[in-house]
Image 1: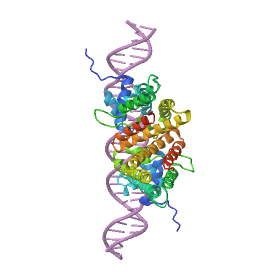
Image 2: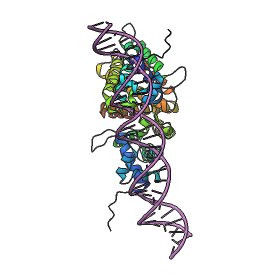
Image 3: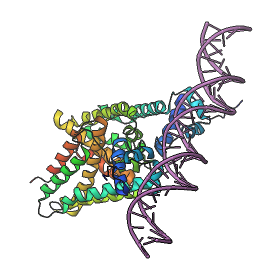
Image 4: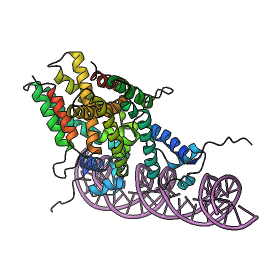
Length: 188
Length: 188
DNA sequence: AAAAATACCAAACGTTTGTTTGGTATTTTT
DNA sequence: AAAAATACCAAACAAACGTTTGGTATTTTT
């Protein structure tokens, strides 16, 4: 018998939800949207998640793990120079925010909902803490503790702000220019 | 006869809505919330606004005008030096984002909803265009067209990013530090 | 092989929410 | 003074949404 059913199970629901949340935001995605995308009924989702917020939390955690494994990790690869590290980090995050197929620009799903659903706040903090630590770790190769700290804080703010502007004006170059500047700060 | 009724009329509804939208965001504020705050029934709101989105658009426009009159305007006061201008601009916006009474931190209501409600996008763009122009106008006193442009883009991104971080970590210093840096770029 | 857990379906529930309708005082215009 | 516009009230509506319940195959465990 050939199984042609869409992948199910918790993990696949999370991935499908992530896709929808990225495309249409948390508030504009209903449990029915998600269920349909998974080939099941919305009530069935409650077999895996106790609420929509619970699902979202697990989606954010998934994204967090993804960033750790695919983006932040480059900061700790000691085979690279500081400049190479930051470059890899920027490239990897561009791959996430720019959809090469559709040309669409995505934001950080957590950020946008963290300010509206207090429940998400703690996990978003963890995400940014890791983001900050990764960037700081790179700058510390070239700068002292205090300056590295300031540069990291500034870089994270600049990146997040430029992602927002990029989405509002539908123009990637805000992000690309910010990345260039961040890399330049490590230039010899 | 003494009139003790809460102020009504379109303008006062807008101001009341702004207060609620700032405190609880667009999605977490219902028409009933707004009506109650105005001392009327929610149906009555439709005498002034044809939808919740229409109301929000007018609230955003109100904020935009407020920023023009109280914040951006300092960029064009030619009695001030560039440094004085940017300083006034930063001070004025801090007055808006920090609630001295409650200690609460507010965000830019439009930004957070523009990414969720496409209808708001054009008016938010106008807001940022004016913001950008004001900052650029200041930097042009010291730098050439191209650098002023880049510095303005960067400053706006940094400010917006730091507002976001400030709210997520509930810590004003992100904004304060960013303002300091922006001012420092005009130091002799 | 029996028991238990898993992975759903089908349907309904209850609440919230934005919006509409019809009417009535009050104010403004003519 | 009559007519028209304004500023609401009171009530209902309709749709969407997250969630619950009860049940049934299927798979896993014992």
